[in-house]
Length: 311
Image (cartoon, rainbow, N blue to C red; front, side, top):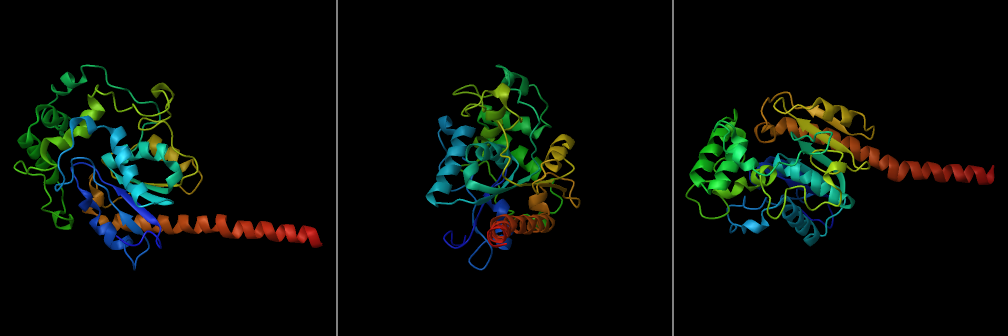
């Protein structure tokens, strides 16, 4: 939405079990000819209800990052403000590591990274997952994917979605993944969890990076670019004090904010108003800081040189 030739780019990565409709309220606020940004929200593989399901060989984080990149390259975008939530954030940290030259700022929501290398699952992890109770929605996604069971996945999704406390605020409330749908839906949306927990062909999710896992700085990506400011919005569901402290210590305008009106993980959907306010305040502050660096400081330097030459 908008014109990429006249507006800076804002790119959104959604999570599970959402679609790009997650960002409807954000498009209304930030995007369009009469707004501040050109915006695009690519879909996770197999999450778009109008697209044919992908082949199983395509269901890897490496390929998902490549597909995100293809969208951005097709639109010739750079200097991007990247907004990412849930699995979109988890995969997005890897995308940011690989393509930091395209990104100027990051807003991540409710998915932190551990401050240590990841534990890659041992072979046989899928058998352990299958012993977990059906009350844990994350492992239910792995079960549904492994069993190719649309009904089990749909029931799992409903158990999560019905827990939202402000259903009237959820964009595209009827955009559900139904067991009778035939395209890009159902058990296939469990692939990110399967990739994370249990995939060994063509390789674990850590494949595709140029750094050995034991040398990673974080649990979701080899490193985080030191030159990219970062806003982290989180709920009381997933609190990481270590992650928040790391953000506070960056000293580059990065910031972490508890979205206090919501205690649930899906606050970007349930409470878009408060989330948008936090985003706008930080984006305005970081834009002002960028102008200081790109305009005022060079002018000050030039003035000092002038004084040295003629005084």
